[in-house]
Image (cartoon, rainbow over all chains, first blue to last red; front, side, top):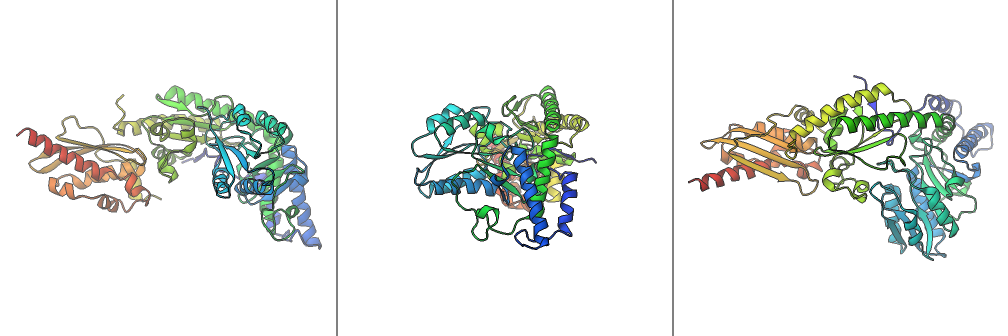
Length: 386
Length: 125
């Protein structure tokens, strides 16, 4: 059975060029970039080239890129590092209620240190209203952090509009751009951000290497204490293989970006249209227009998401769900609930996220098996009497 | 995360469906996740002659309902009332800890169905 991977928001396959690029670093290039000898220097050079490629992809300067172990690490260090370093100016942070847990849980922790955090609501499409950001800003606000593309429902936030408001007040602005970098054009100046988190394994790189963009002049504390690596912000010998992969992933992303957008958008729209035509009692989650090119997220009434996932898996199709049963948290997706979707409907959510390797035939196959699966599960349900 | 037995019962559920002439019906909704299970029984003397289920829920919820129907068919009402969630999970080769309570609803629904049957019998006396 052919397996069809439709979970690119979780992680992407490794780009063949990325695989090729890292191989020498599993062999002859093993030096420590901090060493002065030739073994160290050749690796140092490769790390700096990777930094240039990442910077180029997002319109930044190489010296504004700090490599991290993950986007979660980058997010954590923005919340704690900016808040603590700017305590003299205020103690208020603004974020949204549908951020990734890397930001949300860090904010919750920050509250224990005496900081105040505003969690902005979203509308039924999962959008933050820039006017709400403006209203929430006080004299004590030191950081605003709003994600660029939502990992679950694919909504793309009006980061530029929010950035204009936040910058006019001289407050630091961060966006978690994990889901957008490598998927759509992202430029730190256009978006008016001071800080941006990204990761390699959502753009065909390797797991274990992310980056934080820090605009020159931004006051932020150290991530890890120790050696002088990463402009003394993040000590520890670098994850060379991950960084080389991230650099190559950035380079291929920049080259393939427009083709990726076009490809994913066309398959996404085909899948959305097909599901809406073939299956009754479904609701598209998120915004139809302001949406990540590869994101499809539906709620299926009278169906539970995990049952849907395992049924699809048995047919070779890999997706994801925000149902309680799938998350282990015993409540349905907090993102869907924040959008005002009733819990019993949120339980039947299914996310399919498209990538560069998916084909039209694969989407046709999903559209063939999904209606049968939904029918089978509904036939079992005591709530479904149609 | 799931045993082969769970996946078998999820993919090929036994005794699934509605029973129009049921002698007793029991429905239970999980307060934590909203999973819903409905058990229908047909009784002859004090023997559970036939049993069917409907479930809206995850793999564990469907599989535990399916397993319970196999366990209970031909048993006495008394025996049916004594079947526990733990026994259903045990027959499935175990369930993930998080699923033991929220999705394993079938035994509870069976108990409700048996009580429903006994109440109806009492009324018809």
